[in-house]
Every structure is written in structure tokens, then in C-alpha cells.
Image (cartoon, rainbow, N blue to C red; front, side):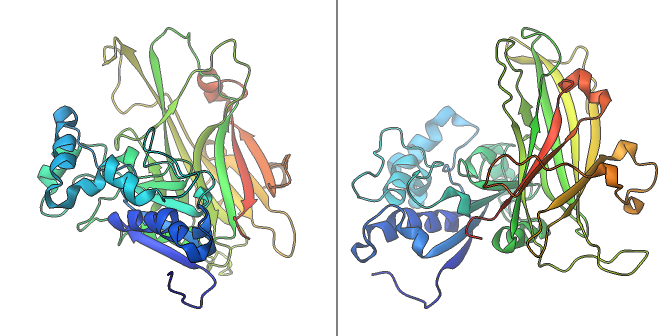
Length: 395
């Protein structure tokens, strides 16, 4: 029997294993309750949204041992650690109901398509392996650099769920739970009224298909009034965005997802330094940094390499007016390289307003801005950053 609280739905916020407990609740416990109809999507009737900090959604794996440590852990179950192995995860994440997925092909990072909506889940991923409590030295070496010290980056999110990546560790003094980055992402996901998706479209990277060049894009998102970055992907933290070359016989313009963020229109807005009045737009700055390195026979070649030297870099500055009283959102954007003054003093001009090109009824607004001409030779003359604003699920 599911206990009733009187509230129509609840928000669940969890750290580490707590996120798997939340998933077990909505994926198995509630669906198996006969009083709730025995359906895979029954959890949606009780839970509105789930936010997880540093949760091992894909289990816990190690960068050493070639899988032997994981097999020994799952075989012996020492200290209950096999709870992060695929067999145990299948047990507590899969209901015994008709239509539920079987063990074959089970992927813990995938939630059933007809179960709890993945759009209601947010995964905050940490990338700092160096501060995981007293055991940080051993943990970071065993789990690997591409982790928060305990959970590898690739295992810290669910496929299709919203996520942000921040340079924080699993716990410790610089842990992810008590971080400002975590709080700001949490507040916007739970209470933000608009969702903003940012994609790179029209990409056609330079060079031939057999030139063995690997292109990597770093991103960092700053929001006016906040002292931290709310999303950061970089080569230094082992999580840049890979830019794949489009085959010459492929005319499809497949977007490169950069990030998804949420606008908290109800939050207090910072004061304008000149007027002392609350600012009327929500300003965000997206830093893009493109790097390339040659790869030969599966290994990076550094013969012509200049470490930490980018091929192109700029910052996209965007002002968004959410569109109150039934009005559609509006946005103005420009590249920082074109602003002839301090960024804090920039005021958008009418010609910098992005035109709405939203083609779907589910989208409130869509607009794009071309990359600066200097980037055309690297990413294609039609490459541009596209912003898509939609209402939050359930709004």
C-alpha cells in the first residue's frame, strides 16, 4: 500500500544511491502496487519531478582491472556492493508486470518509454575526482579521472533525461550536494516555467573524411547574477562535446545538442547597476571553445599540437524576455567579439533581436544566430546556434 500524504504530487531530490531509490520507487514499487492499477506509468501519479545529484544511474564501474573487479564484486556481494551491478539493478528497477523489459539487453541508464516520463528527471553530473573525502586518492585512481571520485561521468545520467555537468566531486569539502551550482540547477528545474534548449545546427566541419582530425567543443554557461557556472564541459575535465563530421553524401542537418537550461521567471532579478531597478531580461552567456587534435592508429598525435590552444573561441550573449501576460518570449543575441565595450554595459539593439521560426505547436519560440565569420572555415558557413523555448512539462 502506497502511503498518502495529502499532497497531489511530490518532488524527489536525492544524492548518490538515493537517486536509485527514487527510480526504484517510480519504476518498480508503485507500478507493482495492485491498488495503483499495476501500470508502468503509475509513478507519475505521485511524483512530479526527480532531481539527482551524482547518482550512479548506470552502476559503478572501475577504470582498472578490465572488468574483473566488477565481476568479483557482483559474485561475492561483499558489503552489499553488488547493488551497483547490472543484475541487482535489474531487480530493483524492473517491475514484475506484463510488458516490462526483460534481463536481456537491460541498460540501467534507460528508463521504460511507457513508464515514468524521462523529461521529469534531471541528473546533475560531477567531474572533479580529487576531493572525495578521506579515500579520495584510492577512489579517484580506481574509478578513473572521468568521474566525480566515485561515479563515472557516463554512468551519472539517464539517457534522454535533462542534465547539467559541473566541476564538483561526489562529496567532501567541494562536494556537489552543498554546491551553489547544484542549488541553482535544482531551483530552476523544479520551479522554472520555461525550458531553453541550445543546439549547434548547420555544422559541416572542415577537412577531409580521412584526415584523422578529432574536433572537440567546450561549453560553459553563465547566468547574470550568479557567481558560478551552471554547466561546464571541457577537455580539462574529460567531458567535451564531440563534433562528428557529416558524411559528404548525407544532406541531413542533425543538430549537435549543447545543453538544456530552465528559466526561473519568479526568482528575484538582479538590479541594474545604473538605474537600480530590476533588469527586464534574463541574460545568459554561453562560452564556446573549439579544439582539434590529430588521431593516428587510435592514438592522439601531438607533433603539430599546441596544448590548450583553441582553433576558435567566442561567447554568445543572450537576453531573453520570458513573455509575460500571454506574450511570446523574445530574445536578443550577439557575440562578445562584436561588443565594443564592457559586457556589463551592453544593451541589445533592435537589429539584434532573433526572429521567431518555431515550426511546431509544442514550441513557444525558436530563433538562431550564425556563428561569427571567423568560425565558418572550421564549422561551415551555415553553422549557427539555435535556441528553442518550450513550456515546462505539465505547465
